Amino acid sequence: MADTRPLEHTMTADDVAELPVAEKLKLMESLWDSLCAQMGGDVAPAWHGTVLEERLRRLDSGEEPIAPWAQAKERIRAQTKAV
Figure 1: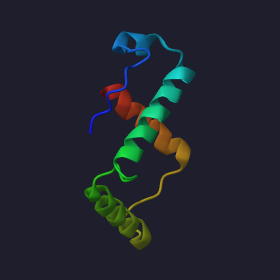
Figure 2 (figure 1 turned 90 degrees about the vertical axis):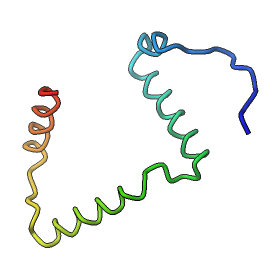
Figure 3 (figure 1 turned 90 degrees about the horizontal axis):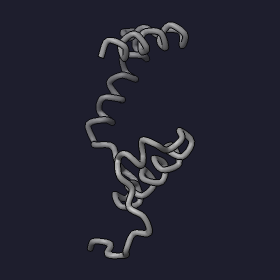
């Protein structure tokens, strides 16, 4: 059943864009908590568990190399700049 309570204030995407980072994080956390409560706590699809299990198996067997955090962080930064 839809919530029909009137909103005190409706925020637009522009309103959110103007918020300071700390306020955006609070809003994001509130939205995430609300989604989790409505979905019974499991928001990730089942296939995420399968992927994580496979990655753990590869780590445990030595098939997947482990990079130092500084190296991994640089790789992630390079990948996000390319996008």
